[in-house]
Image (cartoon, rainbow, N blue to C red; front, side):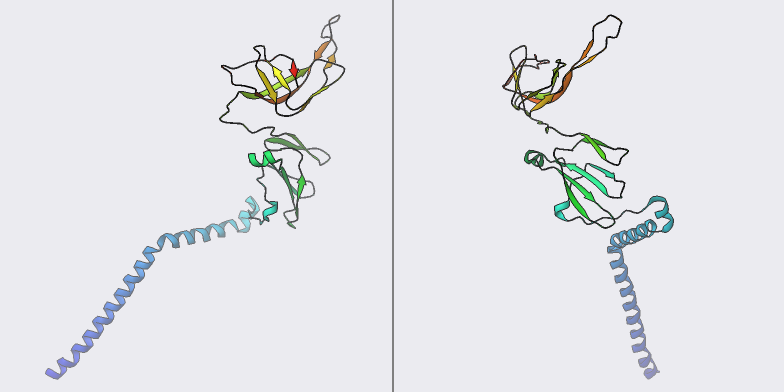
Length: 242
């Protein structure tokens, strides 16, 4: 009895230790899994998302998005983009909503072939930022508008866009940068760029025996006040000095 009992107890202890070890291992694995559950969940979610969007049925309905690698020298903050007839993509940035680029006259347009990944920068003579564009029947792209000046959100002097009109039906006229327009109250507003105002157009009278209708040529230009004022000047006279 004594020897048999002494023989069974060590075996029982080993079984208990083994069971405790297995239990501890399960608990440790569960703890590690619980601690990493957010990461595991995100990984599974990303895998399933990638699986869904790469299925043929999904791509046939929605297409496929791919991130392209663009070298640093060709990277632009594209404001407009249009697909050309030959498959190239014209990406217009202008100053790309960057005032420093605007002040430096650094305007960019990128021509990209998304199949061969050939790309080149196109000479851009003015800021296409905030312009509009349309494809013409011959495949050319017409771009209209753009940015002539960035807004100063904390101006020290009054500023804004002024419309200059020309009632002369025989010729246009050009005003240099810095031309000063004088308001009726004597306030002066200097233009920040040169401008050419087209000649007026004479149209036939609306009624028989009436006078011809003169449609003045007009052009907008940004102007800054020469000095601080006490109020808003709503209109300016036609007089100007250089």
